[in-house]
Amino acid sequence: MQTSDWQPVFLLLVLVLAAIALLHAAAIAARAVREPLFTGPFSGGLEPREHPLSRFHVRWYPVTMVFLAFDMEMLFMYPWTKVVSAVGTSAVIEMFLFLGVLLAGVGYAWREGAFRWS
Image (cartoon, rainbow, N blue to C red; front, top):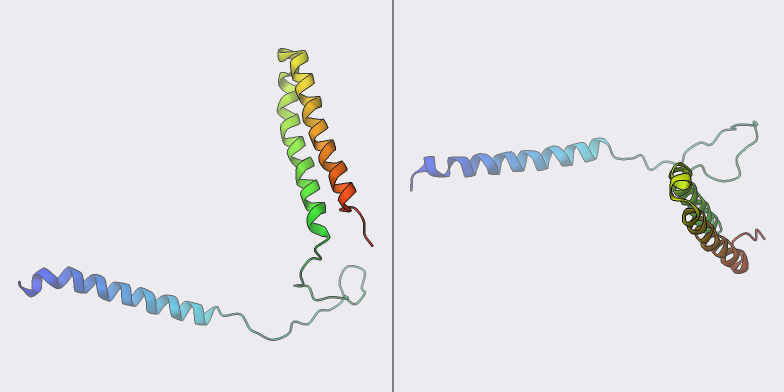
């Protein structure tokens, strides 16, 4: 074998190594500074009680799931309003069944304490 046969392999190897070095250099250049952030007054001028990048309390997740359920309800109800007159009574029955399932989900969330704040 001649060196001209290996030339594309060596070129690809050099390109890959250059890309890896470039990615490492970009990661070092874009590294986040690990210093505490200053949190000044906002909105009403009051001092904030927690860090702006703090996590949400776990009690917000069930509320988020209930919100998403009702968001999906609206997503299905808008096209339903367009076809309900053409389909007729069966479309109305299906929508009330769908709303019943959502209401059962809200009842379950209520029973499990998803809406209790204390």
